[in-house]
Image (cartoon, rainbow over all chains, first blue to last red; front, side, top):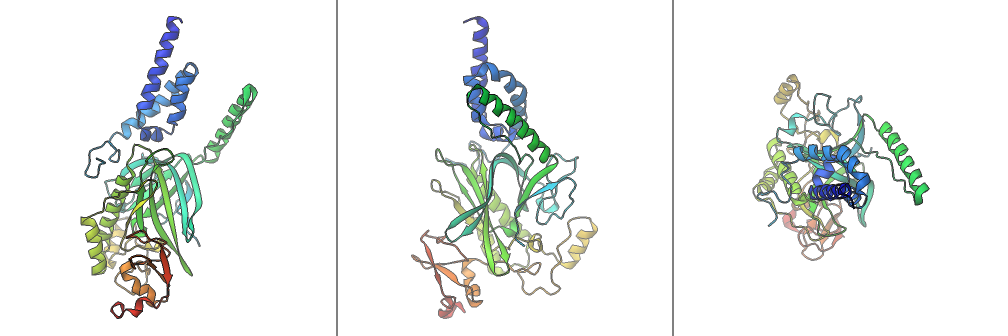
Length: 83
Length: 334
């Protein structure tokens, strides 16, 4: 495996982990399907890195900014929070 | 005519906002236009699916279902509103093999382009105003096959019957649906207490009790737990806004704020507005019984339920229909 292949593989896995760690509400707000993109990045990362970086990542970042203060997330401390 | 809680609106249709949300103009970042009753504290979240069902004796009949879409949900001080800009997504073609995949990719691209063209400038909108809210429930994700979801129950008054319907919203799995449902219930109770000064004392006491001690929703796996409003109004344009005193209505009209829906000149009761009486809680069932409407009672604890509830709200046991005269057999009920 060449150095370029290693770089692409590491980039794929890094993006897939980043995608998997983003909350479902952010994916919903970005109007993209989490399962599809995480799977595709892991299996066919070579083909899906560029579409992900161009078409999905900016939407996720934007949605993450606007929904960061969501009061209803499960890990948000509040009087009704799950113990 | 039957009331569909969801409708498609375009930017060109400047309709009344009583039954459906009005779209905002381009200066606003929100999809729908907020009104005075919405207040300034609007919680916004995203739902991924919506379902409208009719409650029947044998269960729920699905009237409408939309999945894998982005639905903006607004929880305001006066209503729960929702808007979906891409309700028509197209696609769905699947191909096998190299040639099949190529055909599917092309067909999906064409289908999505046509869908985008069809729905351009149109938005699927709907709202449940808090006076219409009969109950709000939630279920939690407990594993594969379950989701975080909320249900809002409302009723529609037809000439010869009361039809109960629910709107169910599926939420992302990191959102706690019970918190959402409790927030809706809290706001609904506050809205009723703040905007219905002519409410009966017992009705007010029930709302006040709910306001002070809102029950924590703890749904069983794959079941919904509900908070029931003591009273509610059938969904219609006449019940969309609280009825205000005449002087206040005139003042609000002058200020260019939403005008009240005119009601009868002589309201027949203190809890009526727009000529429509609030539907009462089980404790007031003797009113229904006296009016000749059949009621149901729990087979275990004997508590009466209203309309077509098939299960007791207290113990969960099945209910059975009793003759309208039964409650009147108790001398204390008349």
